[in-house]
Image 1: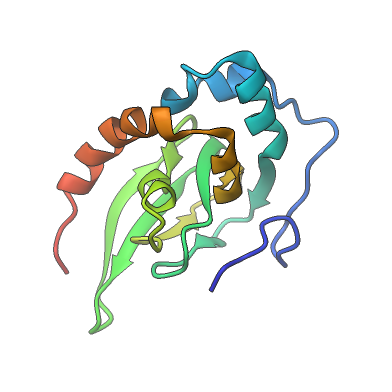
Image 2: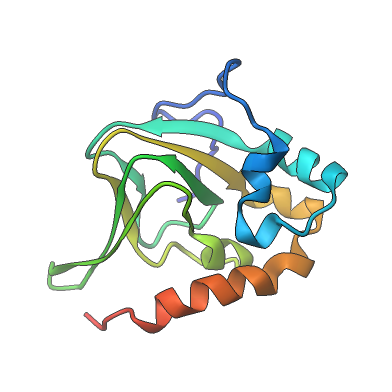
Length: 154
């Protein structure tokens, strides 16, 4: 199931007081080589979201609709087996990005992400690919591959 990131029932809004400075997006490893004009276009398409503790950011198997940049809070990433077993894959903290590979590969979310406390994230929607992120795909892949190489089989 695909979601419209701007109109979903979860807490969603672009806060006027929130600064979407270029420096914030430059801090994202695979974006730091973008020129200012491209980075600004990407930042303007980003969506600010806050999730309460226990809220699901995305579900395993759903279409990967956005890359997430975690500004504050902690997120648990987990995977479920067909017999209901659940395994925690990793914990994510401020400054980390996730769901990159699913977006770039046009695949479903490989796991479920859940807020462990109130979290604030910037979502870079898949549609932002029109900004020509392809040159930066390999930088993203370099940062994501080590995480996937340690995933257990459930």
